[in-house]
Image 1 (cartoon, rainbow, N blue to C red):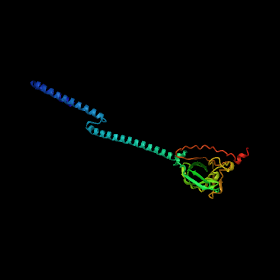
Image 2 (spheres, helix red, strand yellow):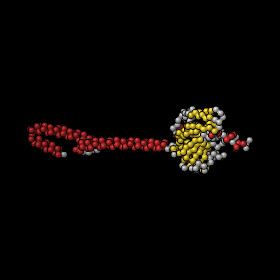
Image 3 (tube, rainbow, N blue to C red):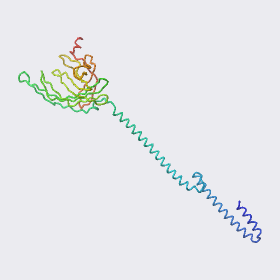
Image 4 (cartoon, rainbow, N blue to C red):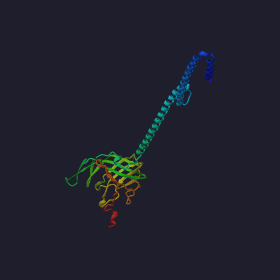
Length: 299
């Protein structure tokens, strides 16, 4: 507005000057041209500043440059925050995976195994492990027999605990009573119940004399357990291996449970164990032996 007033004054001055009006007019035109150029330049600069300012939160031109630096810092900070957040999410995800993996491991470690070959470290029993000779009472006759190592896996089911008993037996000598009978030593015995190993002691094995009525003893939780045979056929001879379990007090004589009675109240199943063929079938195939007193009444 002020520039317009000055220009009008200049015109009046030109009119008053007469002949010098042309020169004055030229000077005025020059001034106007210069003013227009300055105005255009200012407008252009202003538009650039406004444009720049609008890109940076519409601040005034004087603060725009500092705000650009601030914005760049903010962007860098945001990137760091985003990166940190992403890293945190990855850490949480990794931590969650570790927790799941740990839980799986715990679950796996507490799993109750049912395959004896995955529970016990088994061996291949030696054949022809021991040769026994005994001279009889009938002249110079010599009885000779060769015995091998015997290993067993038997089921265990008593007082809410279920599992397996694994024993390794080796012949060490023999005796003579109508025929040769071997004497075995226990190399190894392990009891696995309810998913873990249990401490047992005083493990002994009896071949069972001339009729081979076997017994396998061990002590567990203050009681004595004996694997045996519940059915005997003609002459008191068994027709199958271990099939039942007796439980005694610590004196080995007083019954807690007679599991080898006629009712076979604690049935078990035993299998020979050999690392070359670690396949186990614990189907109960028990039968009453022919000649057992229980069968004679049915004849």
